[in-house]
Amino acid sequence: MSMSNPFISDQTFKGIDFTSKPLSKGDYENCIFDSCTFSKGDISNIAFMECVFTDCDLSNVNLKNTTFKETLFKRCKLLGIRFDHCNDFLLSFNFHDCTLDLSSFYTLKLKNTTFNNCKMISVDFTEADLTQTKFDSCNLEGAVFEHCNLEKADFQTAFNFTLDPERNKIAKAKFSKEGALGLLKKYNIQIS
Image 1 (cartoon, rainbow, N blue to C red):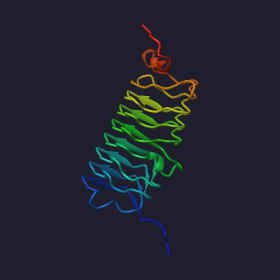
Image 2: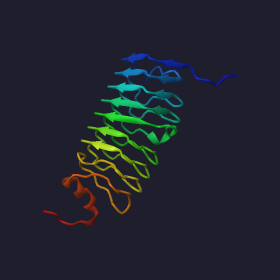
Image 3: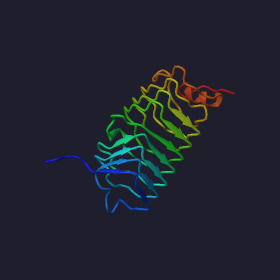
């Protein structure tokens, strides 16, 4: 019996509510998901390669063993997502104008990922590899950076973040003067 998933390419899915009728299992390549709802749904064991999600709600979606390869999320709501449940093989995605509050990237390798103008309240990056990741105009309030590799990461326009330089690798990471204060928070000192 063949276990191969159907292969779906170059399709556009617009305005579909996948909460009532789940997205068919398969390998999706170069597909566009526009204004679709997946909230609390199940997209486990599905592969997305070079796909674009625009104006979609994927909050609390089940990503068990889901593959994202060169996937772009634009203006998406991605609340409380366990990205750490994804298949981490070839994992690569970028986020523009997204809300990622309470999501987890625990232990993931996210080298060269771009987060652009994203709201990322209380996101968990514990033990993630964020080498050369760009946090462009992102609100990182309450985001957890513990034992991360932040080498060459770019925080120059990020705001509201705190991270402990002693508990993360930060060689050659870029910070603005204001942002650098977030590195000193734990010392409870006053800077004027």
